[in-house]
Image (cartoon, rainbow, N blue to C red; front, side, top):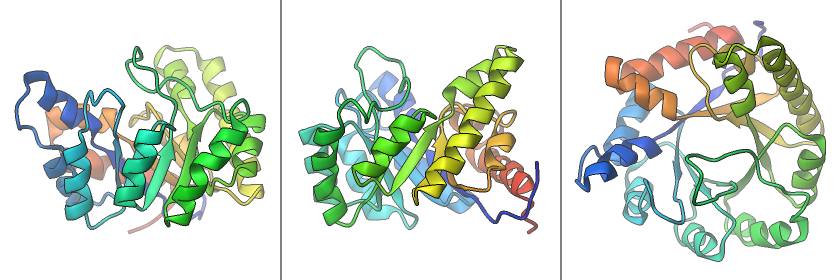
Length: 253
């Protein structure tokens, strides 16, 4: 599993700090404070998803993150005119386009780029012109990766949820098949010249086989780290994830 493939960036998603805050309508816990703690613990970037219903991250959170972060912000958003306008106003380092349905608990599956190729090509063009690196969150599917490449995305983020679910449910054959699919599609995307990221549902138990992909440049992990922070603290949770990722990549500090 190991190999001299270099350091893998770790992006920490702080959405669910805001989920806890919003459960009581209070000012705490503050997701921006969590982002700064993540920086101190070695996060290479911060991810925040501004949903249309504002169920966790708020517009004010995005403003404060842009003002206070030293590491890059990865701004997750649905492909809507409202979100495009917000991204163009703030011009974050990266914009990750994700599917969004109000009834879902979390982002379920990847964006169907192939079905909406023409609209998405026009949607991301102004974001690229504004200097944002555009990422598309998609399943490990060749047709979707090819479509993301055609519309001009610079990055794809592979959805690792099916792999993680199969692992935690004990469906080991399904897990292994999904892992192989992810590996093959990471290789395919890299061959097209796309930068390859991955995320969704990753834990200490599932991260290393994904982190070992030599084509991978970034992992984005949130829900597990925020949950683990309840028991160990956010800094400790991030440092342990960093240790496991580095071990998978054979990076020696």
